[in-house]
Image 1 (cartoon, one colour):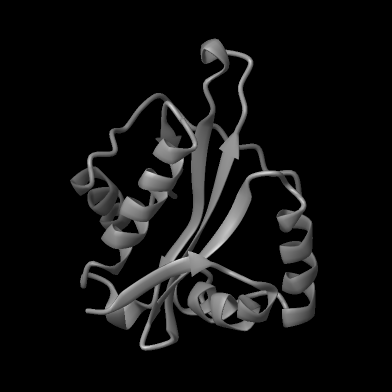
Image 2 (image 1 turned 180 degrees about the vertical axis):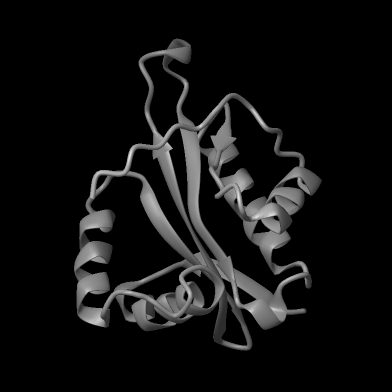
Length: 147
């Protein structure tokens, strides 16, 4: 498998939306124009990046990674990975594993003391995947719907 992972560009937004539609959002996604506006906003954050995984120049997966500076933990930054998705027909083929390894290495290079993520309670297969990579359930995640 010849997989490459790179920073996404605004031109990749349609491919990213395709991954989200099929892997995460039940074919409900933003319009390309709306998503491009958000991509531009995200790119203005100092260390918030969207990554694209490709095989044979075709998008097969994506994730977002935010590195946050901290005043706690002796000033050591932490990372949060979000919006992890792999095309359903390619799940279980090592793409997600390579994406997460890339994210972990990126976070280590940025000096992060941890990388965290959250996953919907219903996504039990995803939980098993994250645990197989060494992620541990830690604490509780709380949510308050705002709209």
